[in-house]
Every structure is written in C-alpha cells, then in structure tokens.
Length: 144
Length: 144
DNA sequence: CATATTTCAGCGTTACTGAAATGT
DNA sequence: CACATTTCAGTAGCGCTGAAATAT
Image (cartoon, rainbow over all chains, first blue to last red; front, side, top):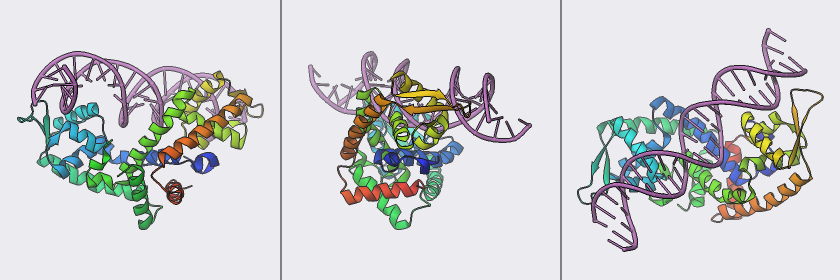
C-alpha cells in the first residue's frame, strides 16, 4: 500500500485512516472466510444467533449492522449450507425465526478461532493496552 | 444502525469496529462529495498533487492508497472537470505527468474546508485528546 | 387504516484482476 | 530480455433503494 508516502493531509485525516484500516482488516479477514466459503457478514449472523438465541431476520439485521435485504440472501446461503434453520414464527406469521443448529454451532467455534487469529495479525503493531484503547475509541465513535 | 444491540463478540472485535467506523465515515463524508460531483478518492489525488507537485499516475496510486487502474478513471474525470492536466513525461514516455491547475487548487481548498467539517461531525463524541490518540493508533496499525 | 416483516430485482461505489499496449 | 507504466474490460463484495407481498 505504501501509505507512508501519502501526503500529510491524508496521513492525519481520520476518515481516510479509518477507511484504510478497514480495508486492511478486510484483506486480513478475507483470507479466513474465502477458505471457509462464507461471507464475513455471515459470521456476524452466526455470532448474534449464538449470543441471543433464535430470532427474526429483522433482529439479525439490526444486531449485525446489516441491511434487511442482505440478511435474506445471507440466511438463504446459511440454510443451504446447513448451518441454520429458518422457520415461520407461529406467534407472528410475518416473521421468520432463524436458529443455529449443531453444525452451525460447530462452524462458529472454528470461525471464532480463525477470526481471532486474524485480529492478532491485524493488530500486531499495537500493544495489548493500545488494542484495548483502539476498541474503546471506536466503540465511542460508534455510540456503543 | 443500532449497533448497541450487537453481540459482545462483535462489539469488541477490532475488524468489525473498524469496518463499521469506516462505514460511518463514508456516510458522513459522502454528503460532501455528492454535492461536489467528485469521488472521495479524487480528494486524495488532489491532496497528493498539492503536496508533492506534478507526478505520475503510479506515484498517485501509491500515495493515495488507490489501485492503478482506478487512478486512470479518476484522473480522466478530473481532466474533464478541468481540475488537472495530463501530459506525457518527455523523460520517460511511458509516464503521464499529472499536475494541478488553478481551478484544481481552488477546488481543493473548498474541499478541505468541507472535509474538515465532516471530520468534526464524525468525531463529535471524542475529546481532542482522544481524536489525536485515534489518529495515532490507526497510523501505527497501518505502519505509518 | 397504518405499520412491520420478508423478499426480490436492481443500482452505485469500491477495490481488485488479468491482460494488452507501449516504453525503458 | 526483464521490468515499469498506462489502459481497458470485467468481476466480486458491499451497502443500499424501492416496491411488492404478506401479516399484524
């Protein structure tokens, strides 16, 4: 990337740095998911399901920071891969209830290990304290 | 976005937070550039030209963190808009030398003001010290 | 009726790939 | 010859829009 040659105007511009850092993150994490035949955003879906249990696509959408219409396609694919189940909610027949199955739970555990390894690679130039700081600052920026 | 409802697994995952923060940055900054009829990456080109003077597209590519092939199209557009000149380098006829002209310099000044205003908006939940810290951490992550 | 959920078809931007053409 | 630069055509992923269908 050679960003050390970038103009000062960019090297200190938060929106630019965030963009470049996100790109780098994407590159590092992409390797993991390419090998798994999954999209990165599907990890968010699986994680939300593991943490909050069966839920509607609308909930998955807001919890994973994903568009409602993308959730449809991503869940389609997860169903095809046998990682989740999609059933109609009897209490509100507009809703689909998505739930993790055994295979999904197993797959998530594998992914978590690989995703964590990717973070390590991404953050290798930061000390543990700095990593915490970064997470904290980003969280605040996002209103978390 | 409602990311406060996100699972812990994501709320503390650096690659996820970087991605979401970059998205937010893109949303905020996009307003500026939509109104200007320019792409965000063209700002990077103009800034590099202002700071380092006339240079080849290859240099612009590495300095702006852009792909060589995208630089072609972005410069095409900047030429059309009359903001830069593209001339062949007599010393190495493979190269194009891109240079800012008056109109480009003026336009850049306007953009800088608007981009700075957008940063303010993006970072409004952080103190000045925290903003500096964030820039520092991202710079380190990127090897700057 | 207004509102919520899912689904579909399609768009714009972005980063990228591979290869050709040209020149050093 | 190996290598660098520009250009072109095309791809994939991502975030998003608008509208239809269904249900509350």
